[in-house]
Image (cartoon, rainbow over all chains, first blue to last red):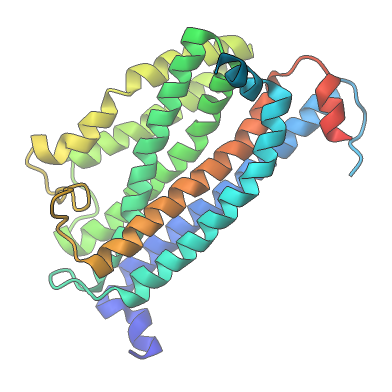
Length: 56
Length: 243
C-alpha cells in the first residue's frame, strides 16, 4: 500500500481524518486542561491559606 | 478495611498517591493508544461493506464508551459522597464532568462524520443519537449547576442529585439500538458469544478502549488532586506538599 493510498482512505479521507483529528484534539485538550486545573487549584490554595508565592 | 479506606480517602495520602500513579496510567494509555492507532489504521483490513470509512469506529466507539463509563463513575461517586458524606467522592464526581462532556462531544462529532458517508446524513433524531445528545446536556447542566453555586458543599450536594437522577439515561442509550428501530447499527463488540467483527479489526478496538479508559484514570487523578486542594481548609499538609 502506498502512502497516498493510505491517506486517501479509499475515498473516505474527508470523513476519517477529521474524526481522528477531533478525537486527538479532545485527548490532548483533556491532558492540558487537567494539568491547568491542578495548577490553578494549587495557586488558589496558596492564596487562600496565605502561603505567598509558590517556589518553582 | 475501614481504617484502610479512611487512610486512602484522607486528603494528604490521596494527593501524594494520585501524584505518583497518574504518570503510570498516562504513559500506559499513550502506548496503548499509539499501538491501537497503528492496528486500526494500517493493520486492520477495510470493511467489505463500508470500506475504509469503518475505521472511524476506532475513535467513535471508544469515545462513546467513555461518555457512558465516565457518567456512571460520576453518578456513583456523587451517590457515595451524598450518602456517606465523603469529600473525596464529591471531588471525584466534580472531576468527571468536564472529561465526560468532552468525550460525549467527540462521540457525537465522530458519529456525524461516520453517518454522512454511510447514512447520507450528519444527524437523525433517532433514539441512540438523541439519548447521547441528552447525555451531553446532562454533563453541561451538571457543570453549569456547580458553577452557579458558590458554596462548595452545597454545590456538591445539589449537583450530586442531578448526576444521580440523570443516570437513568445510561441504560436508555445502551439499549436504544435494541428497544427502538434505529438507523444506528446494533452493538458490535458486546455480543460475547460471537462479536460480529473479525479479530484483526476487533483487537485494535479493544486496545483503544483500554487505552482511553486508562487515560481517563490518569486525567481523573490529576483533576481530583486539584479538587482535593479546593476543599482543604487547613494549611498543614498543603504546606508540606508544596515545599
